Image (cartoon, rainbow, N blue to C red):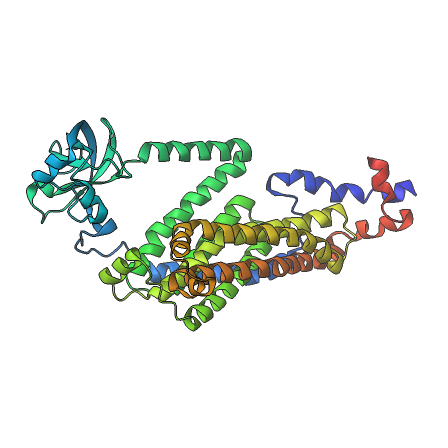
Length: 445
């Protein structure tokens, strides 16, 4: 009895240990590989063709409006800060901020009393490098300047010479680069080679976003089509680079693709039904003013698809890995048993992921929600406003896609593994029968 049970066991265990660097993905039959390739190869070719057809070749040029992010900016340094009487600044007619586009309101009323700061700023880049200008900072201003501080100065060529430059923000490049370095180091130390591949995939994703998706939308291409092609390219690159060119990864790709299609359909339906324009703040208004041909509602839908992609990858890969792990642990499990076991894992994942999405969107919209709370608006009024309704539709459509991805991916993975088992695992199938439930595995421990 012992000799009849021992031979089948080794073939099922060495592949698990050998492929653990990319997860325990058991090899599948040639027939199943052909079936998966018959689906994914045409899809991949379609993505490549879409990239070639829609490739923009750079963002179209335009004349700067001088508003918001569309202003010319230069690097600058605060060289000196001295205390001055706010009333004397008012008597000289100087702006309290130095920014000709700044709103005055209460800040303008407070500049007649108290102690202000008169900051001297030196331009460090551009044609006016070395030029200095002064800026008055109110005592209650949220941004206080100090000597040696690196700042960003906006340039308004049409303004009077003494008001052409103004401080618009603090230069945060050093802490941001340092934080990015700590993140990359943590990923590599913990993830090792897979962490390196994840960082490479992340860099490629940003390249697709920067050099394809954004310029193509600005060139006038349909934002939905651009988002689908770009998101598909990111999905293929990220998943296969991080998890290997295996059948397990291919199943995760198929599950992600089906979920993205569902998100696109639901998003298109409810964005149109709720009459969401996608033009809800100063930034989107500026985009529409500079490029009136851009479909802003389509841009909103594109954002929903791209924003859901990252979490979708996590869910589909996790569910596929769960099915493969369960099959490796017990090769006798059938399709339904695999699905039931893996879907229990998926339910826990759904609860945490949906909560994460909702809290992420709520955190991003927290200042807006505070404004509605100050105005003592009812929940119905808040939800009906386009600003909040846009976030609600974005959250719910993305969450529906995430919820649907769990049973879809689990079913696909269970189907592939169980369909492959009779061909590749026939000896292992008969092994547990004499021992009634895997007695051989207990003897191995």
